[in-house]
Every structure is written in C-alpha cells, then in structure tokens.
Length: 358
Image (cartoon, rainbow, N blue to C red):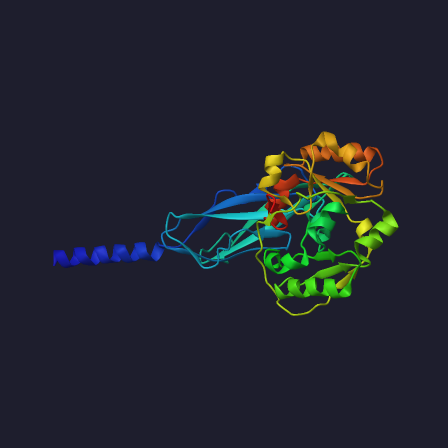
C-alpha cells in the first residue's frame, strides 16, 4: 500500500513538472542603440537568441518590418533545445532615413513572448545624419554602375580605349560571357558602331544569360570625332580581372538586340578611382576602377573635363573622404564612396568585384 502511494505521488510530481515545462526565448540585447551614423552607411548587429525554457523552442520565422532591414541568414523552422542559442545577424540600411529612427525585427516562435502572442521584437535605434555633398552611398553607385566592354581587337584596344573598358574581342566573347555576372548592365562598343558586329556580341552575351546589353552608338570613332582623347587611355588595362561573384539568374536567349547608349550619356558617367594599396586592389576591386595613390589623383584627373563625375573609394572611406573634399572645394564633381570598399562588400557582397588581372 505504501509502495503504491509513493508511486502515485511520484507520478503526480512528474505530471506537475511536465505541466509547467514550456519553451522560452530570450535575447542578449533586444534593442541595439547604434552610434550616430551617416545616411548611406549600414548598421549590422548579431542578436543572440537562447531557449531558456524546458521544452524545445521552434523559431517559425524572423523578419524585418521594412525593406531597409535584412536578415543575413534565415532562421525559419529553426529548433532550439533547452539551453541552446543561435545567432541572428541583421543589417539596417540607413538610405532614406534621417534623424532618430527605430526599426523592428519580429521573431515568431512557439514561445509565449512578452505579450503571449509568440512574437519577440528586436530593434535598431539611433540617429541618422545627413551626408556631406562630397559623399555618395553604395546605393547611389550601385544604381549607376555598369560594365563597359570594348569588343575591338587587342591592338586597337591597346592603341586607345575608353577609361575602365574591358577588352573582349569577338573571338573571346563566348569564352568570357559565362564569367560575367548575369545581373550586370553591359555597354559594348566597337570602332564604328557596326550593328552586325555588336549584334553578334549581344547574341553571345544573351546566350550566356546576360540580360541587359547596351551598345554605344557610333562606336569609338564617333567618340573620338566628338571628344578627342577625353576619357580615353592607351596601353593594356589592369582595371579588370576575374569576377568573384557570377551567381544570379541567367535568362538565356538568342536575341541579338541591344539598347542604344549614347556618347552624351557616357560623358556624364562617373570615373571610378580606387585609392587602396596595390595588393588590396589586386585582391578585389570594383570592375573598371583605376588604382591610384591618393597623391596621384590630382594629376590623373587633370586630363578629364571638370564636369566629369569622379567617385573615389578607399578601404573604409576615410582617405577617399579627404581626397573628395579637397577636389570638391576646387570645383570638381568628386564624391567619396561612404564607408569605402568595406561598406560595398558589407552591403552587396562581391557584386561587380574582380580580382587580379586576366
């Protein structure tokens, strides 16, 4: 009888313990208060989520409240055992924000949460400052950047070509096309703007899944007739190399169509200058960017028209900010890429980034 009573008591105790077992989700810092940040830079933080309950916590989803914030790695249907933690890294893009901002992330799980609805709110909060006139954001450059491709033979290219142009002779186009990022806009040109030659290159690019192909009207000859040696250089070009990211959707077609691109448009496009050390440049730089020491910038741009837009970037933006400010005070259309190359890769990964010379 006593044995039966003890068993009943133990059974009741276990049932009571089980009844009070529940999942619970906690976070190390619910609100990240960031230092004053210039609009155009991004703010990243890793929130550490921990199951402090007695049962498994299943994270159903983790999502931002606006498109300006993104989660680096998805946590949908992620199971945490009691005592287990997981890192949730998120990045807030400040473009379009000003003054005090507060941006939410909602983590939904089977844990009750503060309001009993299974939702935990995480926040980015802080002050966003206006950029200086000589600063431009990754978003600004990203919306304008394209690949400039010279399809003439190597000797014509070496004799003179447009600054930042990659040489892809027709004979090499098929081999190189699949090594180009499919999402990139590409402007191609030959000597005369020949529709047959450019159409063949466009067909090869479209066949490799590159969708946006433009052709410079009138070709290089018309450019020289109008502008002489403006925005042109001689010799081989070291601004290109192997793209570090060629992922993306390839929409393959056999179209030979191109969208017209005019010399007047190209004249207003920016010239990219990379101010980092040669070894850093070789390891990875924006396609078409010219590598210069900060002290050599003034002499290099002296050959360019004063109205030519110039974007300079350094590793973290500090050096390029200084150079851009000096040029801006001299009346040049110069801007510095906010946060430099590090900010570009933080926001866009290796998009448009090439390493070493081919």
